[in-house]
Image (cartoon, rainbow, N blue to C red; front, side, top):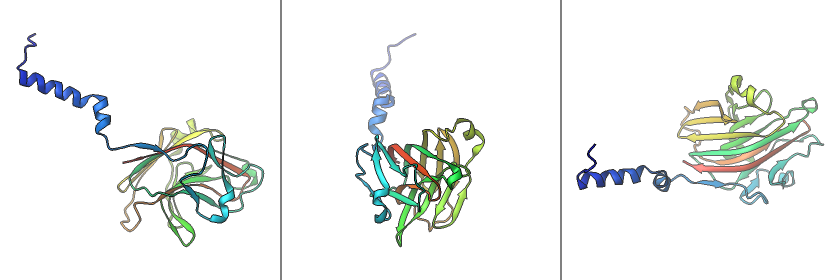
Length: 219
């Protein structure tokens, strides 16, 4: 085989190889993943209701709410100070509690806005009967049911699981433990496409929710 290529062609091939190399591709990407939690403090986060400030705390490098001893008196949310539009959010979560004591439920708000002291917007749901649903908090209710067929085989109900929330344009995708539960397309142009992210614990039962390794990649 003749490898004596014309200088111009060989130069083009070298340039193409450089452009396709992983290091160059990464350098050219404008997407950057950042941590939303420093593992020690709630810097960058605020309770939606200031009266609930003591209901959210950091322990063992996790964001927590609920002590697993007392019932959750009302829904409470901890939100980011920044807003996001197109993004991929990732975290690990653990929800524990006895369903005999009441509703054991949590969720991740996204593209949500604050209105009249309430948080309004999409929620990636967590809990029995709601795993992987998309719920529109304080607005339209349930938008899409989570696909349980595969998730039920890999979900650790009392242990740690992963959540991915991906939004690009009007498309919303949810994944729990790598399993896609929802692929929803928003058709209402009046719904905000940008807002805060928040973690929630639902009122009702004796429960505790924990979140860790919270990151976001702006798309």
